Image (tube, rainbow, N blue to C red; front, side, top):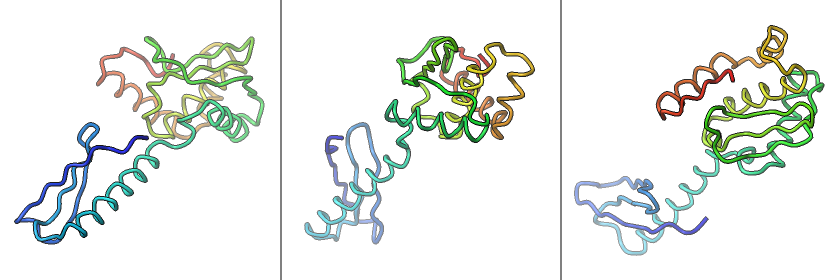
Length: 176
């Protein structure tokens, strides 16, 4: 990740606290006016470190590579499907227009929309369990939903995805 542009704003009303936030590709650091240039440099470096650490925490490794996505599927299959669903491949794909993810049971492939890179991990886990269940039961029948509902946050994740889709105007339903 490239170093963000830094903008330091000094305030006479700010007496002790230093805060920072990202504004596009700019790191804005708010500091007390009385700080020296050395103190300013220290706090800019500290805020950059905190910002990068916070951004790394918000994007877990599962959301960055196909290999870690495949590993997560194997973990979820073991935990929720007794290890019976064995995907041959799992990959991130450009945003899909009508669904969050898709599965081809005949070749064991799962494709996950990049829309899901920014959702909480428990929501992504629901989508992965949903697609893993399709490796065992292709249809959305009662047997399929019994498998999916072994994931404890199924209903919450469906609600989250429905809200996300509605807010963004995508028209994607969580149960497809």
